[in-house]
Amino acid sequence: MFDSIKNIITNFDYSSISNERKEELNELVNYLSSKIKQDEYINLVFVCTHNSRRSQFSQVWAHLASLHYKVPVNSFSLGTEVTEANSRTISSLKRHGFVISEEGDENPLFGVKFDEVKNEILLFSKDLSHSSLPTENFAAIMTCSHADENCPFIPNCDARIPLRYNDPKAFDNTELEKQKYDERSIEIGTELFYIFSLLKDTNA
Image 1 (spheres, rainbow, N blue to C red):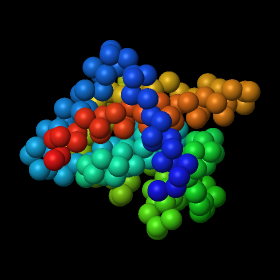
Image 2 (cartoon, rainbow, N blue to C red):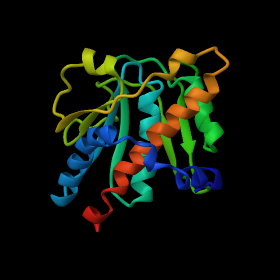
Image 3 (cartoon, rainbow, N blue to C red):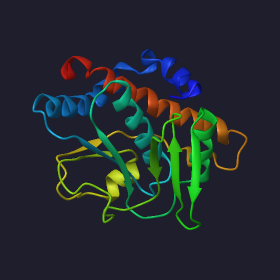
Image 4 (tube, rainbow, N blue to C red):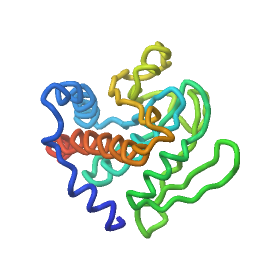
């Protein structure tokens, strides 16, 4: 793993998560623990309206957390409508140290590398109908209130778990844009790594 990303992970501050928020995160902890104990396949699908910001950050950090804590989880993301992975999201990941390639013009495919090996996470905007997504044995993780309110039914999911984050879009084209995107990414990363850290004993 690239040193810059290792440093970020090392400096995740779980104490910054309030007790109230930890109670909310426990719903996902319990879901994952149950799946691990039953030795069942685990898929997490992070859902947001446009699949462009928070759900993409979540897919990346959940993938890294599963590798870091050796918990076998497949991470995906989708939107209630197809747009594209926002360029500001991609720029934030680059600032963290990810190496990112881009292919295509409309709704481009981003290959996100986190080490020197040919490991990469593929990011692009998609909705529930996309063939790359699991159709059963998955939890739908709702990362924004708009998706939670406007996507009341996701077929065949094992669980629907709210994990809401404020949208950094509110700071687009302002002096705070880079700061707020990076803060949201780190917040999501911190919480997902915290969740996976609690699964170590379960997975042992």
